[in-house]
Image 1 (tube, rainbow, N blue to C red):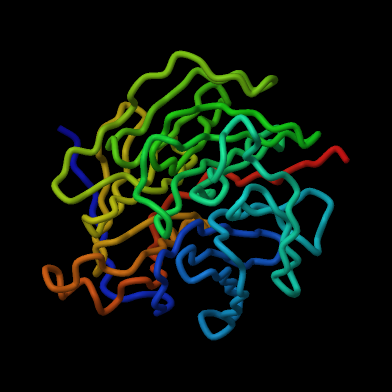
Image 2: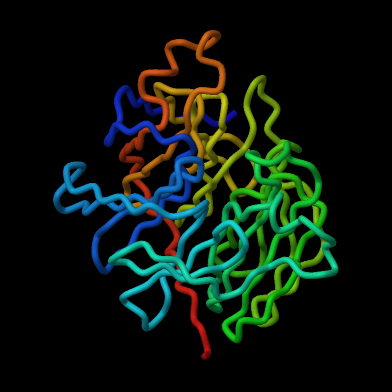
Length: 307
């Protein structure tokens, strides 16, 4: 059995009290890291040249994921309450590009849903999952994984999901990976890059640990996955063969999503759900963490609108 490499993080890079910190996104051109707080309606941006004191925060409604837009420096694209929107960098102002629900979904679905995690593929298509908005109702299997193409056509790629979370593609662009958190599973699909089509769904990795579920993940250049185990206070490194080969221990339980900046891995977190049972988890809950892991991540892609 291969030895598991271990890292221990004892304090945050940036101490915050995010209700639900998520979606760390590194923008190479500006050397900034942005991430969101879905519960408290914030988008946070840190200039990594200046450090934690440079934090800027924007008030935005229910933004859950962000990506850069090719050729547009003054705005980004986000997943928000009702679908895909552009966000002005200077003000945080949202303008919807594509709302995802229509008459086929019946009355009220737009109100009881929100967007969740997302990622852009090599062709510039933005994949974002939707889930029941916990402010309205508990998660059910109403979730859908959407794909927004450069021509702004919308596709429903996976239906009957509960909490669509971490997603990504293999370096050879032949396999798509997708997390449905309550199942404990990260699924894999055969992927056709030219069309964006998915087929042959099967389980890649299953989390079987008490009080832990898979949340967001990041992929490195060696083909491994760095998976946040929310509820366990850790991020695990999993090989292409679905074996655990590394583990980062953190000082709060509710770790939500990792993201690479060079060979540093940044990790978001959420507030402690059970502070009486886990009082040691409360102090740094909702903070942003960093650790050097000695390997870099796969590059992030930009949404490429054709209009």
